[in-house]
Length: 387
Image (cartoon, rainbow, N blue to C red; front, side):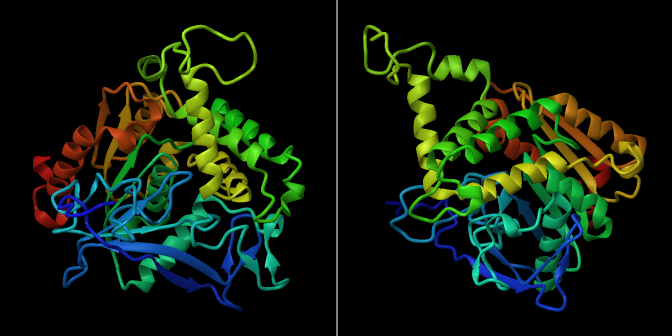
């Protein structure tokens, strides 16, 4: 139970925005149209009179709109970026109006494969169209327009959220003054695509998957759990796994020499898989990982510098030293392309043992960078030359 937590933003409410009603469905990159679309979103803090203090937070692969605060005083845990959003935190809700929405294709209130297809009155399942990072950004843009915001102060996100930040900067260059992609990339590596492919196969070979037509009472839990276990390994680092688990056995002094879960790292991954099955939809996992695979900001020309030529936002790019899923060289490629376009860009590699998950865990180091950037890089405050 969370009580008297002065550091938390407190009670928050998830809201819903529906758009793209017929005949104005959203045209998707795959060539199909989708509508109506509902986006779940939350806001924190107060919008100022001229709406110049608005920050959009973009979540990662399995995140959602609930980024900070609690829905109920008895909530037993805090959401994924509560340590960064709130009074006096990096995204200070005493200063900023913070918005976070669940992506289209998700399963936490926004339209996705689990939603009802208005043409059949049944869940979309695999009839849901393939969505991409640009499609997600177009949907977010509709939400920002609905909120009456003509320009965002900043767009920020980690991992897949960082991909959305980059896409925002390219697709809507006049809609944002600052951008902060964290632990992200302009394109996935073949290795990352391979991990995604294995995770999807784990789901699709589960007997309960039924070509995507499973029921709430008979989900492909085994396959989804394995997919999460595979993914979670990529979020950690070798050093963090040594520190956290080593080769320690689970509550045993001697091995049993069979196939029970003996090592602590095995038990941890099983736990992560079991918890994930209870909160995430298998088909959404298929669609969202595929969207990440398709993302390539250097296309269609094949030249990242050329594709970033129209960017106008000031950038803070952050990577982490032990992140082997989106290693620092990927962030440096973005920085190099931006600098060659004379874009105002700052770069920091944070030394961390946490691997890719560091963007959720290195709160102090990340907060210092973000606080300074928001204060000094915003063209509206006149300090950008000092940053």
